[in-house]
Picture 1 (cartoon, rainbow, N blue to C red):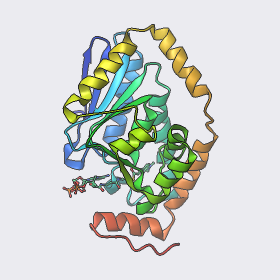
Picture 2 (picture 1 turned 90 degrees about the vertical axis):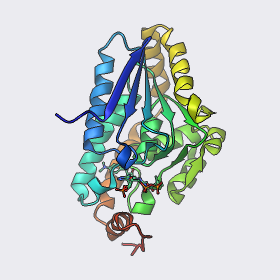
Picture 3 (picture 1 turned 135 degrees about the horizontal axis):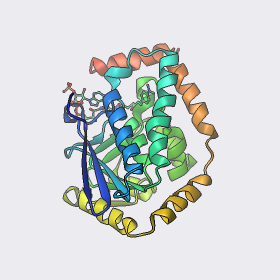
Amino acid sequence: MPDSPILKSLEDGVLTLTISRPEALNALNRQVIDALAAAIEAAQNNAEVRVIVLTGAGEKAFVAGADIKEFADFNQSQGEDLARRGQRNLFDRIEQSRKPVVAAINGFALGGGLELAMAAHVRIASTNARMGLPEVSLGVIPGYGGTQRLAQIVGKGKAMEMVLTGGMIPADDALQCGLVNQVVEPELLLETAQILASKMAKNAPTSLAAALDSVLAGYSREGFEVEIERFGKCFTTDDFKEGTTAFLEKRKPNFPGS
Ligand code: DAK
């Protein structure tokens, strides 16, 4: 059995989950998605876990997105199916966790990586973090809830700018627009996230679960289905073929627009 790409450590009620696939900047392949979903699920049933901290291994990346090599040859139904399953099994499971989830963003958080951080309840970033949703530069759109959660967190205008340019923003800008709650030096990131998590962990677990439910109840779920459907359609386009091929060939794309 191969080593799990998710490292786990539990201290004083705070479970730290570290995504560890450094050779691909912790990109989300199937194995990472399944192992992380299983770890989040196991934490729900472990009374010793009160709060979860989610981070990436190394100093360069939290998660540099979904694994482009893996989805480059998907068709429409594979794209739709994977978006739906990924949203339900991992991203919704994080957001709907009965225990608070704090993301410690230790470098690049791009595409599916930023979507993962946005499914968490609170985000802390290191000063070297860079965040963005570059999907439109690959001929797709965010498919793991990014179009919905970004707008919920930073508002429609800033979300439109980020989704439509596909550009990255530095940690200070993310703080200014409310995408992250706090920015700290890289060497203090994990400790800061764990201290915040410990403060939450001292509170009544049933109250934490009820508070999470209540805050989330105010947000519509309708847009997530639209995102899945539009995401799947992207996989039928020549723009998608060109975008992913250009990334894998390490060149700029030349989109045909069809
Ligand atoms: N996937 C696979 N490999 C990746 C990767 C990724 N997302 N990001 C980086 N890597 C790999 C690189 O290919 C490289 O591997 P080797 O060439 O050494 O074998 C290694 O990690 C180191 O990366 P770089 O050499 O590029 O490092 P740099 O410092 O030069 O650049 C970077 C760092 C983060 C700016 C750059 O790596 C980069 O632009 N990465 C890609 C960012 C990106 O576009 N991410 C994908 C966003 S789209 C889906 C649902 C959702 C999604 C997809 C499917 N389904 C339901 C099917 C979401 C899509 C996205 O996330």
